[in-house]
Length: 87
Image (cartoon, rainbow, N blue to C red; front, side, top):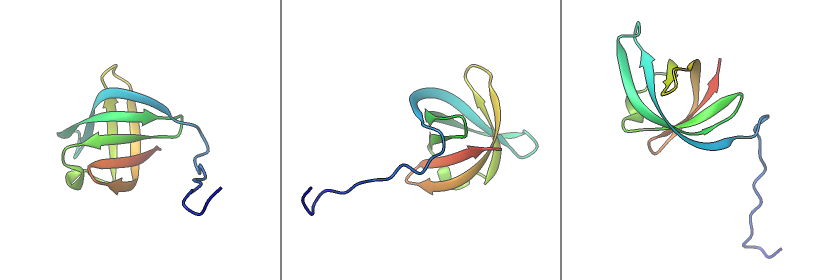
C-alpha cells in the first residue's frame, strides 16, 4: 500500500443495501411533508436524498412508496443528503 491509499472502516452495525425508493418525510402533526428518495437502507437506518435538507426536522416519520412507515432521527446531514437511524 502506498501513502496515497486510504482505508475506510465500516462503523455501521448492519450492512446497507443500495436502493432507490421514493418516499415522504412527514412531520408537524403530520400536516407537513417533504418528498425524498431513500438511496440506501439497513435494518437500523437509511441514507435519504432530498431537495431541501435544511428544512428537514431532526425527528420525523418516513413513509415509503410501498406504504411502510418508520420513525426516524437525523444523525448527519451533508449536501442535500441525510443519514437517519430508525427509532
